[in-house]
Length: 477
Image (cartoon, rainbow, N blue to C red; front, top):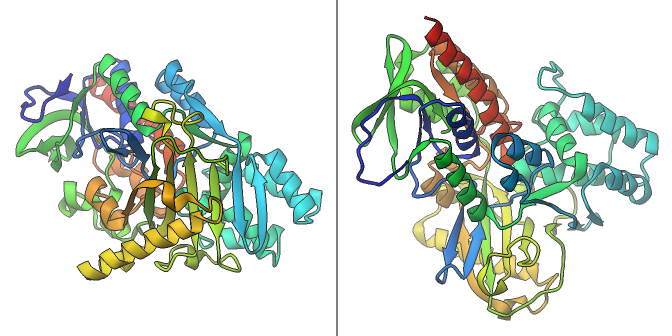
């Protein structure tokens, strides 16, 4: 059932899930389908977490938040853990472009075409490219290699900043990876994309989440929106439920889809953990955030096909720090063509979303006046950047809005507006949460590998299996 805002929850649950990001929703669907009593609590007024959207002008304009592209593996995950209908709505984006002072490349983002680009355009020997892809394919989560991304690229492409740029830049946009992060965080994600390219959900995020909500309800999951969890209840050293709207709701297990630091330090409390676990949790670094500029075109305006994703930069070389600079030199345009990805949009309106990675503190320190001026500058520079591909686009724009890390923080409750959860060390804290407090699990975005649409959904699968085992052990007692 879908609880109304003023409805009180008057029953106990096998599993209470905090937050409806794709990990939380996927876990809820699996557990509900398997016959467990599941309650999904979401602080916002709609499901999806960072997989979200907003409407303007009586829904004539719809904008997906941030940049959404995921590997082909999302089809299998959705078919197995959601429904055939949802899986069938996933389509490939075949036109990914890179435009910067070092090179111009148009690709379908598959390993086959990347191999051609690296050998023919960048003059890298085929055996080197093959060895690189084979090395990435051999990586797994349990590798103990301390190799960083910087060391990985120097190993195969020494001194080739341009090669590093085409290999690294899209993954940085996808999950916040840097050159100093462990190479495993890059290798697994990049290999997944290289399988068969980049995919998205035809119909948009609102359509996807709507289908998922219906599937959740069909599988008996109870949902309550605008329900912010204040605390996770711990009794006799184990998870026992949550406190929401001042009322305790009992549950045999709890799965948090919130940030791991928020879950441990705020929702549970330091007193319930060992000193060592708390120290490690406090040492977990938050990942970067992002800005977006949303542009909706006037009714009836059509544009030529300029690409599905355009990674564009004016900076002369690849410099990861510049990707985060408030003075933007690099941005990615996502083009939502009605006939290809948004057939449900009234009047066939085109939407264009520009995404940039950034740092929360750069925006937080601004005065209100400085903040508004910086947003206006960002919007103006984004339109100017888009004019390089669509010279007359300015006169065709009807809706122009912008979001910053402060916007992300406000609507998602992510600390410091992080778009990609935590750095790699957060994964160990997350996966071992239930070993510190029985019945308490975590599936929020951690470690880069467990971020993005596919990573989040698959993390929900992993944690649902752990919860199944825990609930089974309770029956055994």
